[in-house]
Amino acid sequence: MKDIKQLPQGWRRITLAAALGDSRRTVSGPFGSNLTQADYRTQGVPVIRGVNMSYGERYLGGEFVFVSPEKAQELKSNLTMPDDIVVTQRGTVGQVSIVPRHLGYRSFVISQSQMAIRMHDAPLDRDFLFSFLASPLFAKYVATSTIQTGLPHINLGLLREAPINVPPLDEQRSIAAVLKTWDGSIEKLSQQIERKETVFGYLRENLICGELRRARRSRPWPIVGLREVTKALVERNGSRFGRGDVMGVTKANGLIPMKEHVVADHIGRYLVVPPRAFAYNPMRLNIGSIVMSELAREVVVSPDYVVFACDERRLNPRFLNHLRRTKIWSDFMAIAGNGSVRVRIYYDDLADFEFRLPSISEQESIIRLLDDGEREIAALKYESTAFERQRGALATELLTGQRRVHSARCRAIA
Image (cartoon, rainbow, N blue to C red; front, side, top):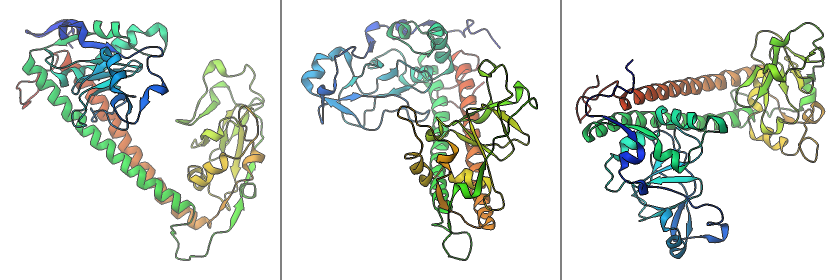
């Protein structure tokens, strides 16, 4: 791989401010109390409230708030126009958008957390600059520049000083066109995933609650309490398992190894979690932080957790694992538990949950259908992640000149 400092002939490595030719092209949103709730109107000049677009959706969308033309005139240094680029000050890749022309507004007010780059008559191609700001190169620059502050963020000075490799204008357009094609493909896949998740959510809700039936018989399912078909598990670790067997529960990733520094020195009181058992933190169950162990072996969790298992003669754990993602479960979580500051839902609280329970054979039929749907969506998300990584790698190579676009029409890439 070539050193990125060794750029192709005709390329320049300069700051963004130098590439734009005028530092006044970059502006930041108003600070302090310049915009308050009292300034907002139902019509007037729109205020851009948020920027967090996916790869393919380059343009701002959704609802705007408005300020009066008089207020907008006070903030004229914070106005941006269609085709300009808006960058959020916190976060990196993906939090950049192009101000839309099709909405019919002549100007927009950027809010406190945003910056804008005025692209009218700019010497850089707009889509090329968008591709750079949405690339791993810019993300790395932001992360490196703010490494001591924790959360990546960028201010106006850092934006203007961002190093950018600038090829001739026709090659800028060719690079942007290649990456825009990838963006479109990723966006279509994202839309496909979103549609499938919508359909899957409808199926799960109606299959689990008995509105759609897999069995021929239409007799209603009996209502049972969770305490009738589960039991709390209170077996302690003693000296059976070591620190490497300690797990934690997260909403996003389920059962994961606990970080070494938060594990107690002595883990004898930790609770044992068998395969297919459920574990959760009583203070986080109301936000969905619960997991069914998919592991083939026993592990241990904090003694502050709750662990319980299903009576598999009546309730398949995988059926309950789907049930916990339905509205009837979330509605129960909204009223369950105790505590004035942080809600705590212990096993006795959760065991009051009531639901309709089909036969084991009908449960298994529902599980097969829903598990297939989950696997399909997971496969599509894996594919989307792979595409995004490939797009990022390609962007890096194109934006550093390691890979060249041979024609303005992007017929070939070397």
